[in-house]
Length: 185
Image (cartoon, rainbow, N blue to C red; front, top):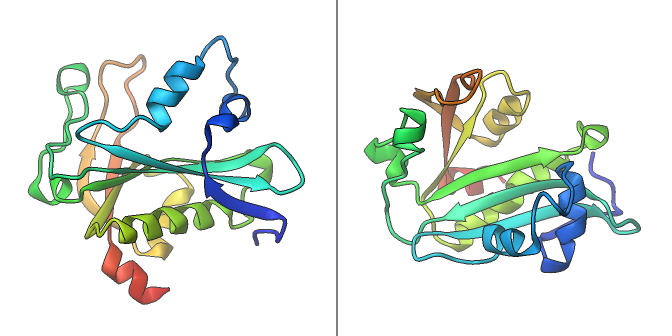
């Protein structure tokens, strides 16, 4: 269970160094400018809301989750030329929000942090009046159980990035109705 000394809050610019370390990178691998563009700069097509789990008495990130909100229905294509795979179904494109970047530090897994991060992002989706939210996940990921327990359902849409070496594993698309999620809280 998540400890009382753990807080979930929006990512801040001053979290740059901590987030770089959390992802196992060096500051030379990921510039402050690219960090700002990735997490804080809105585009005409998308707005990101990234949340972090942190201990109140430490400066270490325990977990992250990002909700990408699309103000208009847009075709969400996952690198058609690059990946030879894309999702163009009306159901996926009408989601207007995608949950991603869900990661919990290995030593903090099985403490409810991932679930809490996902719940915060779904509450953000509700504030944005998004009808449903999608995510893409490797079917063998243990987090699939968490997603299913929260109400995410597999959409039977599967794809694979083919230009990676080796090719990526098959990925599943899952969705949740925000109204259904709120009703079960």
